[in-house]
Image (cartoon, rainbow, N blue to C red; front, side, top):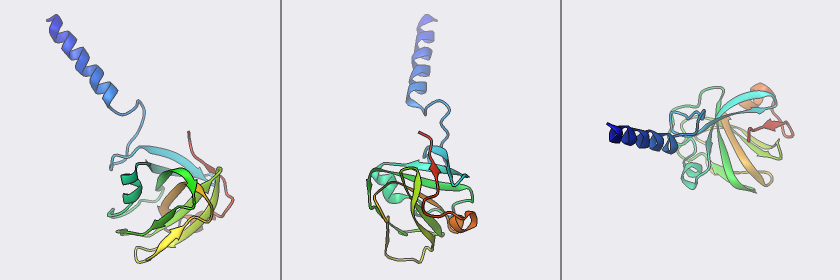
Length: 148
């Protein structure tokens, strides 16, 4: 009986330690979620940071609901380049540095070819549904608050 209790305790501890952090929510795609604001407008964003996640981004997905986004943690501030590879819906790209909108590429379509470069070195990039920046009057210099 005591041996069973010890095994149960070990399995329970392993499950807790190996699972997600307490209170951390995840998207249906397995990425951690965070709530950030752009000019006071709330966005629930999936956070991606691994090379594989950064490459895949929102590719192959059928949609990005209003109020949602994807926050790319680039690892370093650089003039990063994005493209619309395998996208099925339009997006706005919001380049972020020093807690501010550093640049915008609004209204990108899945049919847009080529690449889109940050106007300055940025460590963060936010993709939101196309039209978000226009609907909320987002412009360069607007504040962005990302929880730590």
